[in-house]
Length: 306
View 1 (cartoon, one colour):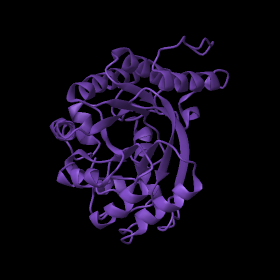
View 2 (tube, rainbow, N blue to C red; view 1 turned 45 degrees about the horizontal axis):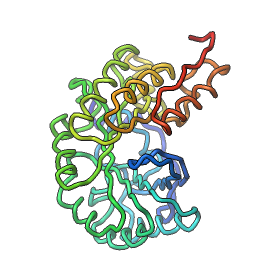
View 3 (tube, rainbow, N blue to C red; view 1 turned 30 degrees about the horizontal axis):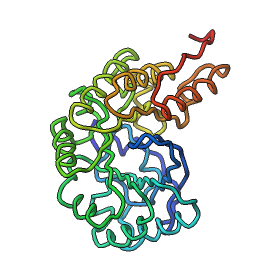
View 4 (cartoon, helix red, strand yellow; view 1 turned 90 degrees about the horizontal axis):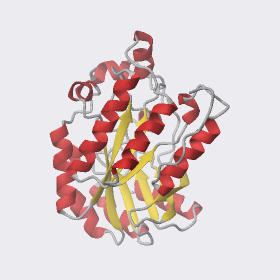
């Protein structure tokens, strides 16, 4: 699937204000030190990512052109003024933090100043954009820097079809660069991307955990792939994609935790999309949440739907 086709399947963007983040929130997370702390997440309003991935729906809350210099630190400052103090902050800009078209390097100083009260700052980056610029930003920070990278899948043919515009070698090289400079990294893993059956989705997600930890990743988050971005809906109609089951998400998270090689998380947003049983949905969400926080496999939920 190429960029032209992916874009042609889209609907309209949401109205966003380039002077404000389009969302912000608090969530609890088990940190690298083992503590469970509140984490600030700021979803920055920014230009669309330079890489047009097949499964991505983040474009819905982006601008068509780069935001003005100073806009990103203004957004961060505004959001932090609304939120309580925490030890950890995630800055998600619907793309790569180190894309000059998204966040100009001239904004790094103000951003770093705003982030001084934190202990850890997490940003996202495409592996091909992990370079000396990361170090220049790291050197401005008082808190420790951590970089989140989309691994997505280790299935070579499917990875190519996702239009991610990266190889597994690119990923390994990016993680290696970060590790060599003492920067922690985390990976995003997709559960059942298109062109996979349910069982294949589970198997390849497990392999992605194995690969990520082998490269030096400190933490992995498995994300069930959803419809709703246009392209994925078209693939559902053609029979090339179906959303995974919440049961599969539980199984893959159990595997990640059992490896005991780093923190393993499951994305718990909108999980009602992946469940066909209202009787046990809340219990399953709570189970996934508790496993995320305590990194222990807890007893499975018993329900007639299984």
